[in-house]
Length: 168
Image (cartoon, rainbow, N blue to C red):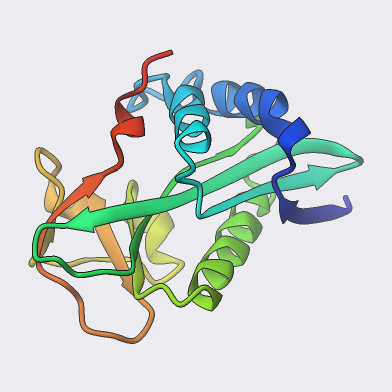
């Protein structure tokens, strides 16, 4: 399998929506609105990093990173997600490749760090850890994790862009 990770192109948006919908279709923890969130982030100009995974000239995965705000005023923090891979290709390290490339790209843009909401066992592999001083309202602490790119970890409450409320 030949995997290529590249920046999203304008003509990729429909395929990204389809891949994202399929990736989350059977996930119990999902709101099943992830594809709408990505579209809303794109329309709002909030996709700081948007990468696709391509196998045999077909998009099979996607990752989005967008700015977040921290109540303490800490700047340069971003939220990773959604990240999606077609169900039949999950477990083949495509998601890991998307994750590593996206985080490296974010760091090269001068970001201070990144937050993610998700499984601590999975995201911990990439250096994400729960941080008691940083929270996402209504979410158990262990599922909201941070990754600092060298600076001090901020404290406060994180707010994602309003695009995360998209339902269609």
